Image 1: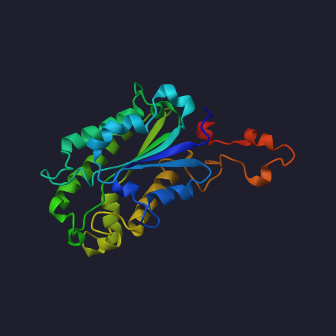
Image 2 (image 1 turned 180 degrees about the vertical axis):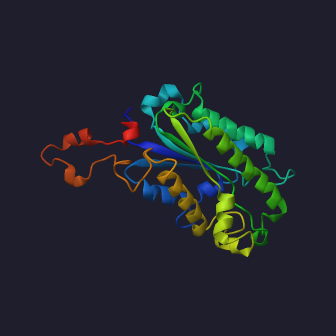
Image 3 (image 1 turned 180 degrees about the horizontal axis):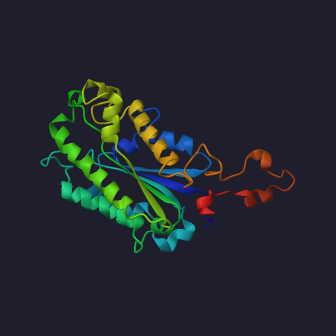
Length: 270
């Protein structure tokens, strides 16, 4: 089997991550920023919650004994809560305690020294926890009976808490770093409050518009430029994130096989 060509990013979540019909969605923004540097693997599953995704972890992340034949995971976004937070009588509901336990399972699998997964043992992993976005019930034709603003906010608060907790577990020479994107607060701030201004960012009161994904991208860019600085994610800085394959004008036309010698990785992975 051939060696993996590029490192990868895994976008883990529900329909907000899966979305492909909205322009400038999550997939398109990441794919555009990381072309020729990091492969983007979308593992967003519409309608899923953390409980239904947990059994799939082994199919998404390779075990450490397979590290040499699988791509190194450099970035994982974890964006759940929109479905977990439906009211208790709804089919997708996951209790707040179980939601937290499932997120901890994901985080331990990616950070624990005893983790069976390869991602936890490779230098340069970055994890982004994302809160569920706010709700705008006035736009919800299909979802309103199963959702409550105050209830969803408690799920967002769990994500904020876990990000702060795991931040304290980072070590200077450790493999991983964690960041938070508080989409609940950031979207409300962009909208100027919790009123009808949210309609610009939420297409149906629950899912994101292009502008909503723009809020995410602004927050993600801040992470890359600050907390994740120097960790091989800055697509605007070739010294931090060089193209894996050299530019065509650097290829020796008389000896093209030498292109393999020019394959580049960011300093954190070299």
